Length: 324
Image (cartoon, rainbow, N blue to C red; front, side, top):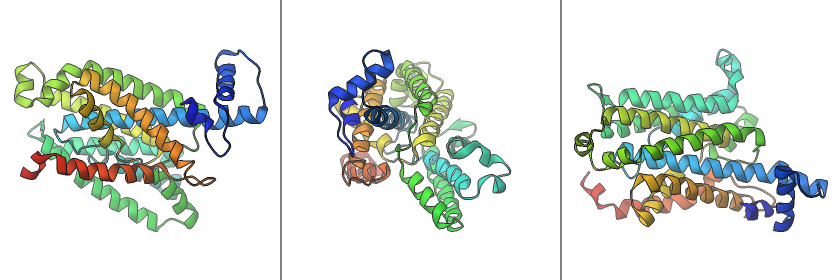
């Protein structure tokens, strides 16, 4: 992360970065050059930290959703959470508080969070059959809800002015360029607490991975566990998208890469998925601000370029999908 902070439109020696960070965190050392201090502490350090937290949150959400619906292709996009967040954000950007009856006062981040939770609640309701959550129905409900929300979002975009439309597109493609230290405590607490809680559910997640009948035989209340996992996943997705916009494929790629390395035991899978997701998005953010200096690329473009080939490889690798 220190190396990522040191690289940008103006490259800064790693030693100087350490000096600035050490001065602000511990109070030791000299303040140094004010311009250097501002670049490192005000702009780059919170950006790198936010990218790490967002990457961890998206990766953990993807890992849980894949177990929840017993589908290796599941992620927050497939289950409609991302589209809910996008619709909430776009409504506030384009229509504001007038059209939303004052709801615009919650801001883009708050609306994205509310949109993801609302989408999760709708998928949860539609994914039930006779009072029990069914994995296949959850996926189908997520896809259907996602398409409806996407169509509404597209319609709202048609009403937007060119300035609003540029803001909408930048948000939907994802970015941590505007990261501030004040954004980090809330999202960090949610991601960290969710990851710890889900890791504590590791044995039950392992049982769920073996099938509903096996999980029930081991004493797991499958329906209640799925409901809890759905709520936590929606909370994670809504929280990170609220501060970083729409970023796809992280929740799809990272859990699979970790499983290929250490296996599917969720007690190890979830912490390492969070760690690799954090590193991955820090690297992607570094690429986004260095590949076409001085301009920046939205994160969603790069994650799609890297994630789409992985998705196709996963389709070809998973022979079980051929029987669906």
